[in-house]
Every structure is written in C-alpha cells, then in structure tokens.
Length: 302
Length: 253
Image 1: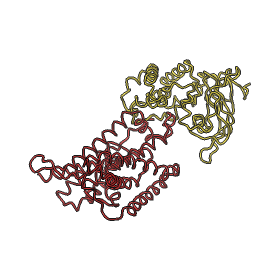
Image 2 (image 1 turned 180 degrees about the vertical axis):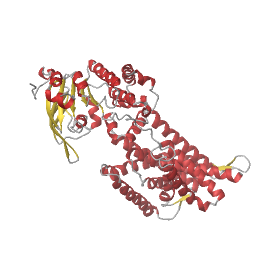
Image 3 (image 1 turned 45 degrees about the horizontal axis):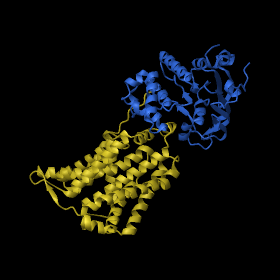
Image 4 (image 1 turned 90 degrees about the vertical axis):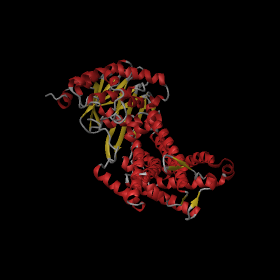
C-alpha cells in the first residue's frame, strides 16, 4: 500500500512534467494543426540552458543556493520562448499554405538540428546540475511516505504555470483570440485579429513552458543528456494525444494520467515496462476514442 | 431600361462612396472567380448582390474584406484603397464581414464570440459594453444565451450571433453573406427586419443573398452576378420588375 502511494506520488511528479511539455505540443497543434516535433528539442534545450545559466551565475548559486533557480527558470523560459518564435519564423511560416506534410518534415528536421547542436556543443555525456541548487532533502508525510524537496518544487511550479496559462487562455482578450484562431484563421482575421501575431505568442508560450519543464526535469532526475528531447519529449507528446490534442485542459489531464499509469505499472509489472505501458495506453485510447479524452468539439450546426 | 453604369446618389454629391469596387479580378487557385466586376455602395445605402451558387457573390465579399487578394483592379473603402492592407487591418477601416456559413466560434460562448467581434476596439470596455447592449436589444435571444457555447445554439440563433458579432465593432460598412440561409420563413423576416433597422442607424450594407426577392425589397440598388461577371444592375425596384431577373431569380415565368 505504501509502495503504491509512494509510486503514485512519483507518478504525479512525472505527470506534471509531461503535462507542462504536452501543453506546448497541444497549443501549437491548436493554432496551426501542426505536430511540432521540434518541441521536445526545445524542452531539452531548456535543461541545457538551465545548466549553462546556473554555471555562469555560479556566484549567485553560492550565495543564495536553490533560490538561484527562480531567475534561472525565468531566463530559460524567455530564451527558449524566443527560440520557439524563431523556429516558427524560419521553419514553419515559409511553409504555410503548402499542405500539412511539409511543415511536419520541417519540424522533424528542426528536431534533429536542435538535438545535434546540443550534442556538439555540450558533448554526449550526462550533465549534472551544480550541487549548490541541490534539493535532496525529503519531507515526511504519513508513515514512510516521503517526497523530495525537488518533487514539491517541481509539482508546485508546474501547477502554478498551468494555472496561469489556463487563466490567460480563458479570461483574457488575447487568450480568447488564441482560441478563436485555433478554430478558424480567416474568420479570426475578419475580427481584426492578427493571426501571425497570435501564432507568434503561442510559439513563445509553449516553448517557454517546455523550457521551464526542462529545468525541472533535469533537477528532478539529477542528470540529463541530449536524448532527453526524444525520450521524455515523446512521452509528453503521447500525453497530449491522450488528453485530446489541441485541448489545453486535455494536455494537463493526459500528462497526469500518463504519469499515474506509468507509476502503477512500475509497481505491478516492474519499471522496465514503463514505456510499453505508455504506448499501449496510447494505442488503447486511439482505438476507443481517437479524439483523445477531452478532444471533442461541439459541432457547428448548419 | 436599366443602365449598367448607374451610380447611387451619394456618389453624385461628391462625397466618396462607402465602397467602390473597380474592375476587380480574383482567382481561387486557377479558377478565375471574379472577371472584372465593379460596384458601388453609397453612404448609408443597402446594396443587394444576387446570383446563383458559384456566381462569385461570397468571393466578392472576401475580396472586399481583404481575405482574397486581387489579381487586378481596385477596392476603396470611403475613398481609401485596401491594396496592401492585410485582412485583419481592413476591419479598422470600418468594414465588418459576417461570412458565408456564419462561422461563429462554436467552442466559445456567445459573449466570447461578441468579444471577438469587438477585438479591434482593444480595451475600450465602456464602448464594447454599449455595443453589446445594442446587439442584445436587436437580438434579445442572445442575451438569454450569452453564457452558452455558441455551437449549442439553434441555426437561427447562430445567424443572429453572426450578425451581432459583426456589429460589435460599430462598422460603417457591413458585409452580410446569406443571412437567411437555412432559416424558417418567419425567422427570415425577423432577420431582414433587423438588417433594415441596422441600416437605419447609418450603417451601409452590402448584402449577398439567394433569397433575391427579400434582398431586392430591402435594398436600394441591386447587382446581378453570373459566373464572375455583373450582368445587370440598377435600382432594386427596377430589378424586381425586370423580366430576366423575374425568370432567373424570382422563380416566375
């Protein structure tokens, strides 16, 4: 029982990372109907940039310890967000109107570029975050149930970012315009919405969240290398599909669900079955409910 | 006899007409959809554009709102050319377009749809609420359903929302595409009465309709489109009486 609860707690942690990264896939899919395969790469760059900034800001880490993470995460979010905007301008916008396949190929190309660049710049070996920001202590919950400080930080930060996004998308003028653009570009233009500007904002916010997740994931696992984008990033993509791609609450739900199911599988089958479980769940959902759990749209009546 | 070059009254007084379309050619892919059409909407006028399916009526509206780029010719809003102006900026010139098929945002609420209609007004809250009240006065049903998702509305309500949304930015020129499509006859009358009311507040209207009779009764001027060409034009009353129009579009003879 305790083992189960402990694993569920870990599942929740991983799940909130999945959710945070899944948001980037789902938001871009929403406005462009494009699977941004480069998103995993941007997320992985978040981990590397976090490591770089922490190294450069070593004096800050020495003085403030883990609190140095706050400016670092913000800096990473801005940098990765700008990388996302640049990616859209270079790799996707010129291909707008050429159909759905060319941008996907371009996305795959961009993913490889991001991955190779990281490997060439930082090397293929695992990187470890500076010990100054180490949060290795653990809270004791009931019984032998514990959570690490990192876990608490990661979950709280993820949930906070998701809540902010939810408020932004649902209750602001630009957020509503974002939802309008994901429904219909031309009609949005008729409202006076600059569709390219909205797409630019989406390509900032999605990768920014992914970048933050990169730092949190690296912090949680302790070490990472350039394969993080494909391994972890692809799982987040599955989470987006599970929840219903294009649907923001769906991405959050899909992430938490995937994290939870994986951790349950780890208890009952062994952790080496994690990936099998994730992909089997994906197959199951696609068969039973191809639109994903929340991926249903209210039909427009004629 | 109907003159093909008939000009509405406003143009003759010297003030720039609300809308001038001069010799416009436009393509959908390789299809030559508009083959040199010209038309004018005077200040405060209702102009009806009638014709069969695929004649180019909706295409004309898309060209005016900037969604479709011109191959040739010129479109002027109150004397200002829209050449090089992106579609989302044409709205700021006072043009509002209620498109073919209504195109409401189904997963947004009625209120959010109206908010999007007022997007070009930015954060002018008081102004936007004023316009919202006006829309609710025209279509009380929308007020009742304001928190509902637009996709759950009936066809007639969706049409009201499409028109209401187009009124939210207080346009000078309203482009209405088939406001009566798929509606019960009683509702069609309501919609046309409302369009008349909107026009009385000073909004110029370019109306595209399959329901030629209702459209011509409402309009001062009419144009008949056939396969991308304007084949007839003149005062709406003369078109209503015209033999060719009666045969082809009013189901008589």
